[in-house]
Length: 272
Image (cartoon, rainbow, N blue to C red; front, side, top):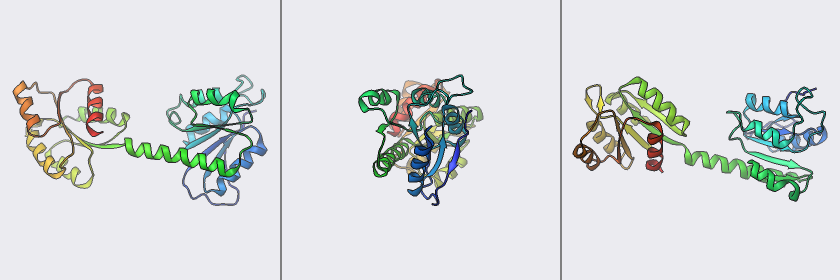
């Protein structure tokens, strides 16, 4: 029988606002680990098998997963799938909600037996049971801090200015999927309002904004956000001398509208 994942509290109120899922079939060890984490202020979810772990990861979106490797044969999805930690990790990585969630393997097996395979499979760390709570919390905090710092470094805010709604929608969606935070504007007035309230890391700007001159807006953006790289992204076919003039006037790059990959790759190089 598959057990549903559940929240665990052990007399303390969680204060870290971080959610950890513990996937462990041994109920004594599961409860012990969950209580140790709860005492440190974490919100804790537990799961006893692969099916519960996968469904819970989709629903709860944990910040980190502690995952056992060995599960008994009778702990399976409907009795038909012999889950182990590596199979569970494979399925977690297929979920949009958990594909980037850091996983720490916990096991009674030796490092020689499992560690290299665990790291190769994508786990952040391997901890051999029994481990003390101090070591466990230290590894968790290091892993979560690394993830937070990486997210802060990678998340760049971009202003995308284009008068055509479909381009704003499609390009904005693609840029967000590429890791950018995107603010859009349809014309000069909206762009000026947007840039007053946010700190920008990059600007993508069309030349023709429904009859307005995008290059005039570029001059204003340069004054308001000096040093922020500007990418002119236009459907107008420009002569080489016109492109050269745009670059001399302050644009970092000038691209013809087309492939989204070129836009994302160029913007990543510019803002980093």
